[in-house]
Amino acid sequence: DMKWLLFGTLYPAYYSYKAVKTKNVKEYVRWMMYWIVFALYTVVETVMDLTVSWFPLYYEIKIAFVIWLLSPYTRGASLIYRKCLHPLLSSKEREIDDYIVQAKDRSYQTMVNFGRQGLSIAATAAVSAAVKASPALLSSRGY
Image (cartoon, rainbow, N blue to C red; front, side, top):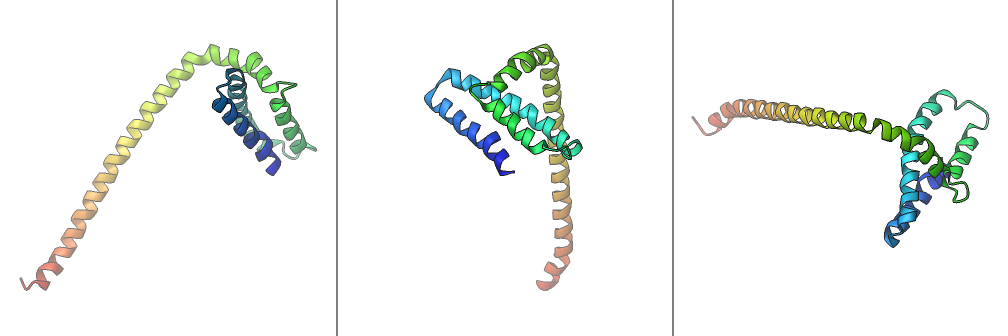
């Protein structure tokens, strides 16, 4: 939806850029809180789109909610971040960090295994191609 793209991502992205460019710490913190809330909202929205998108005025409510998050008058993202997300993330930070470290270790090991399998497949293919080509190569040279 074009309104969603404009209000939910492009507008805040532009003002995030301006905050970084001007080194305005207050605005920087405001937009960082917005992006943290927006990330959570995106996850919740994905589930809701699959389950309650039939609800009357659903899309209008989503747009109104994003505007409420963005508004400098309501400071919705800041409110949700300070009242809900910050306390929750603070209480679960150690478990989240441990999970991320484990996930990185697993993904690194998976990459190493895929790399080994890829090299093995490539080596087998190269040997197979060489074996198939060598009789033809030998016969073309008159051996």
